[in-house]
Length: 206
Image (cartoon, rainbow, N blue to C red; front, side, top):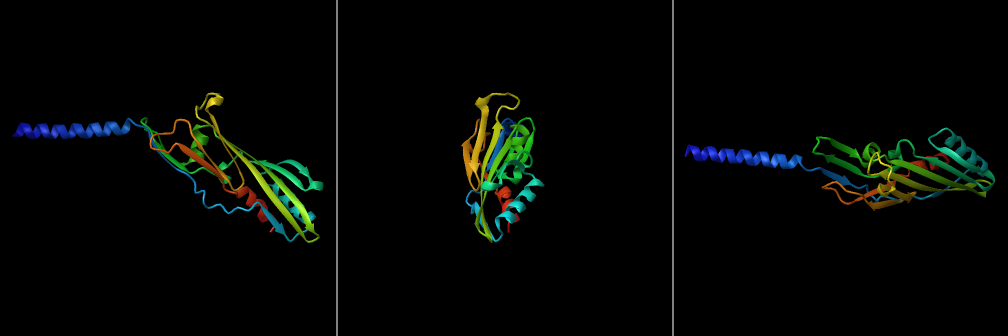
């Protein structure tokens, strides 16, 4: 009887160890995409300011902000800006991500943070602003931004076959199939505009 109980205890212990070993031999993760149903972005607005007031307000703001002025054409009311090289999470949302690796390495945070740390991710955004006179007391401003968020899924190797890019515009998003998705995660990743940059401009002209 004692031998039987001893054998039973040993079997349970070995079984527990086997389960534990199995757990740490598999890289696992979880990805939660951003909410893409909450978009009510409007890319134009009308202000109760004349053209010169509106133009000056926008130029003064962007000159002392995160924007970089690429082109100015006051006569046609066109202004081109770029941004995004820093603090990408202000401008786009790519959901949340976490993983546990057999090496013991763990991560939990935004997918943008993960890609910037491990996939050499870079955001490039170009904004086109069109400011047009309606009459002597009102002006219309329209904003369209093109976003490009690029990742390299073989970190440290310059191989375009492993580069992936999310491309979308203001108020929109893109979902792509990623290379080698981690076990436990869905095969796609989604990035969308937060409209932070666009709203920063609209707030100036209110």
